[in-house]
Image (cartoon, rainbow, N blue to C red):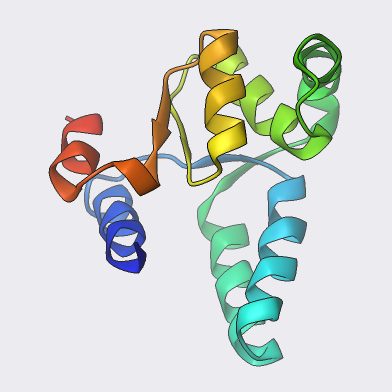
Length: 126
C-alpha cells in the first residue's frame, strides 16, 4: 500500500500534475500523520503538501459539498473532496472505500488505491 502511494506522488511530481485539494485536507493530513509519526515528521509532511498543492477554499465548494452530504449521507469531510472533483471534472484518488463509493454514485471518476496496482496508477495519468 505504501509503495503505491509513493509511486502515485512520484508520478505527480515527475509529470508536473497539479494536485487540487480542499483546504481542510491539510488539517486532516496533519491529524492522521501525527497519529502515525512524531510531530516533526507530521509537520514536514503537511508543510510540503501545503506548499506543493493548489488549495481550494472551503467557500468555493461549500454549497456543492452540502448538497452531496444531504443527498448521499456521506461524511462532511468526504463531501468536500467529492465536490471538488465533481466541480473541476477531475479524478478523485482515495483509499477510503466510503468516499470512493459516494464519488462514483455522484458520477465522479474515482480511483480506489487499495484495489489498484501500480500499472493502474500509471495509466490514470497518461
